[in-house]
Image (cartoon, rainbow, N blue to C red):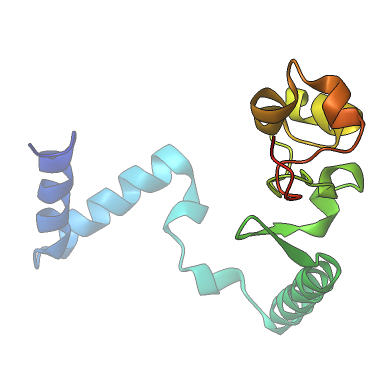
Length: 145
């Protein structure tokens, strides 16, 4: 299926590519009437050395800012994905002491603050056995009873 307006655009392109300069002039006049004289001018018509210098100055300043931001925005790897360090605060850098995963939700944060593990490890190892967990038992310390 052809996109909407395809036939009109194709007809306009064929029309503009024809050798009939009178038709081109008519199209330019119609565009000028609808959008103003500036719409049909050559883009270089109002461009001078001063505007070129200003454009180059603005471009250089923009790229300096981008470079400064890139240097400031140090990336760190979190679970195999590079993340901007400014997006992570100190609390979010804490990971589960059991599985090593970083908190992904509110329940992970709650479990990390209370039991030093994520919600998944809480359900698997701690839930119903809080006393054992709080006395120091961990699934990876060799005494899995």
